[in-house]
Structures are given as C-alpha cells and as structure tokens.
Amino acid sequence: MYEQVKNTYAEIGVDVEKALETMANTPISLHCWQGDDVGGFEGSGIELGSGLAVTGNFPGKARSIDELKQDLEQVLSILPGNHRLNLHAMYGDFGGKKVDRDEIEIAHFQGWIDWAKEQGIGMDFNPSCFSHPKADDGFTLSSLDKGIRDFWIEHCKRTRIIGAEMGKQLGSACVTNIWIPDGLKDQPADRLVYRKQLSESLDEVLAEKLNPAHNIDAIECKLFGIGSESYVVGSHEFYLGYATKNQTALCLDAGHFHPTESLADKISSVLMYVPELLLHVSRGVRWDSDHVVLLDDATQGIMQELVRCDALPRTHIGLDFFDASINRIGAWAIGTRAAQKCLLLALLEPRGLLREAELSGDYTSRLALLEMNKALPWSVVWEEFCQRNDVPGELEVLATVKDYEKSVLSGRD
Image (cartoon, rainbow, N blue to C red):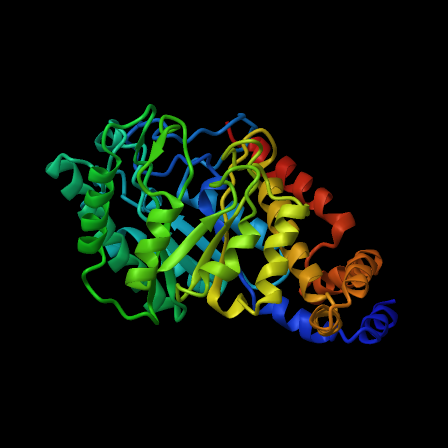
C-alpha cells in the first residue's frame, strides 16, 4: 500500500521519501513540565503561580526526577523520529538542599545531560522566572526594585551558561528561552518605564557572548496572562523589536496571541528580520490555556507555513501544554504526534504545482490542489514512518499508554 501511495504522490510532484527524511531530521522539543504539572524539584513547597495554572489531578504525576525520566523514556518510545528535551531551571537535581535560583550551577543539571546522552537526544533550557517569592508582585526582569531585578538577571545569566554547557556536551545547540510573567492586572499609568527596564535587564543578561554552536538565545512574547490582563511588559511588539535589534531568536507561542490572530501568518514576516525562530506549539482555548495539541487547522497552518517558506532550517519546534485532567503520558504522545502529523501533511503538499498555479494567477487550480491534497491517503505515509522507527501505529498508541498507566502510573500515590 505504501508503494502505491508513494507513486500517487509522485504524480503530483511530491517526493515521499524526501518528506520522511525531513521528518526524521526535524526534532520536537518535549516540555518536561507536562509530566509533573509545572512543579519542579526545588523542594521549596511553593505552589504554581505568576499567572500559571494547571487543571486536573489525574493519577500518576511524576514525583521525582527518576520518575520524570522514566515517563519521558516511555513517551520517546511512542514517538517516531529523534527528539529533544526542554527543561526548566526549577527541575535541577539539588540533592535535597536549598539552592535559590540565582545560585544554580551546571552540576545541578549534569544528571539530565548524562541522561540525554544515553537517550541520544539534545536539550533546550529555560530560566524559571515564576512561582517564586521574588516574582510575587508581578515583576522580575522589569521590576523597579533593583534587588529583585538583579536576582533575576543573575538567574538568567546562569541559565545561559548551563544551556551552553548542555549544547557543548550533547553536540547540539541548546535553545535557552527567556519568558517572564511581568505585567499588571489593570491599566498602568506608565507603560514605558517597565519596558525600558526590561530592555536594560536583557542587555545585561545577554552581554556575554556565547558560542552559537552551543547556545541560542530566544525571547518569548505574550499578549496577556492571569493577573496581567491589561498590560504585559514583554509584548509581541517589544520582543520583535528587541530580537530584530539584537539578532536573537524570537519565540512565538501558539497560545500567546488573541484567539483571532494567526500565528502562521507571522512566521514569514518575523523571519525576514530575526535569525531564528522558536515555536511553542500549544492550543489555547479562548485564552492561553495550553490544551493538548491536536491535528487541527491552527497547527496545520503553522507547519504549512514553515514548509512553504523553507523555514525549517531556521526554526526550533517545541511544545508547551500541561494538562493534568488526562493521562500525562497520553497527553505528551497525542500532542507530539499531532504536531508531527501536521508537519507531514505540510511536507506532502504539491508545492511545485501550487507555486506554479499561484504565480500564473490560476487561483482555481491552486484551490483545487489544496482541497485534493486533503483527500490523499497521507495516513499510510504516517504509518510507514512509525513502522520504520519501530514505534506504535495509530491503532496501538492508546493500548501502549494504558499498559504503562496500569503497570507504572497506578502505583504512584
């Protein structure tokens, strides 16, 4: 059946083998925080805050680094292709000791690096500028309190050094992404003062030049958050300007814009001015609710745009959702595989014919080709990809997740 489907696609100029090769070489960075509801392992007892919320309490949450690694290994065994781990700074191995975030060191993450080596995967990293007493007033890098500001500047500096070491040891550049929750619930009297402060803080954080083969700096924008409904310091416009001026990567999160905005439409514009793009593929439902990614129009649009404008070599794809209302392993597997399916669909488009029709003004053919492509048996290609990678096909995924739930997750209190 696969050979027949491959020949069908060849008739419209699509090289299926090339598409599968691209799939194999396009990792998705798995977000560690899906496994434990953004808790981390600092042992401080601080509850999730700073505008972040997780819904649900499904049994089997990872309670330790070892359990989280075990769960991640299970997820990786379900996913075709080669992927990455995206780690937050609050997930270090602190040995039961109190280590504040301005004191973190490479040693606290060496165990993760060694684990990633064993798995044959790369790593990405993030400062954790939330759920901390020094983020309680709603400001971190943009705080007007120098002591608060300096604390978070030091934290971010250290994450860059740690990220660079991850990239160096693993032989694959680590994307170190800065997101802060800074903002106000109601209208500010002065929007500019905080943004000036954020710009100065970022300048200090990024002052040390690191080897781009080891570390890639990214900054992440947001429209609004819980407790910052009226004003977010790090808006899209602010970070787009900063990334353009300083030539950092820009992170676009699918849940960080107005529900009527198209993230896909931003990609080609942004890549005209910034060197690289980081995507956090998520699913916001009326707000930044970080639902599990689906094979839906929004996600397909993102992947189509990456392929259509040849942006994959300059784009780092990660996930950012956390759903505790369902099996967490299932959430990881369903969401990641959905993102991969959307990418495969984009790679199987007859781009040559589509561009030819568009440039000649034949919009009827363009529309017909796009609709025709939706009806082609792309799922056969997906199953072939799963088979080649020795992972479960669509009919086996749920059983694999349920078996793990029964044998491992059910034993956790």
